[in-house]
Length: 254
Image (cartoon, rainbow, N blue to C red; front, top):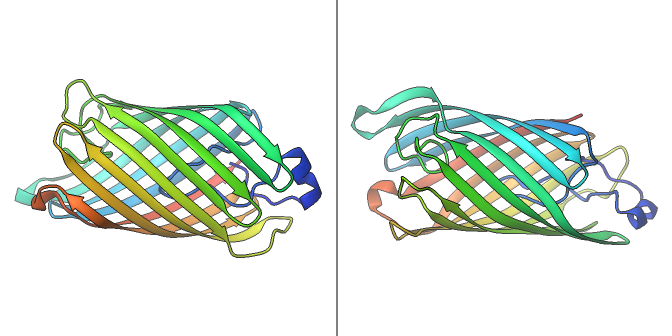
């Protein structure tokens, strides 16, 4: 996505964005057509099973200003209980997004997209949810976002389905972004993010509510992200409880 601020006059033409994309959440605002973004969002996840380090290479392409296709190729290093460890190619993900609603006004915009992730079971069957399950999964959701010069709010609801594994999941996310610097061109911005993730594994009857505090630097077409995610509510087996996740991200748009 394009990380620049334009002068307020150009908001009448709806081509300015107040901040970069959220860190653990998503937003519906897209670049113009025929643009590419390469990015990564490393996750260091520590729970009662052990530690996993997930490093995806993400390649995003926008064929039009309201559509996106992407592939995520992830490397995973894990060291779990009972001596289970390894360094592998995790489940590859193919993403699609389509923006079907957009309403712009001076200094603000509201947009909604349909989103899907198709997970190809290239990883080991180690039941690291969202990282490597070794089973096909299909996620289908709706992302909406409202953004102004002073703040941005994004939300997402969706369902993850797998015909073979017990990882069917209802997922909801809410994120708030606050830019700390005044809009300027060329873009230079520091953003704070406050992000919540609610997950219910319907077949296992597991529930988690997670909170992520993040900070982002955006300059021209490059961003750098840092976030710490902690559990607020965990109604899952004690042996699977999350202790923390650390996210380190970077992206470049061209």
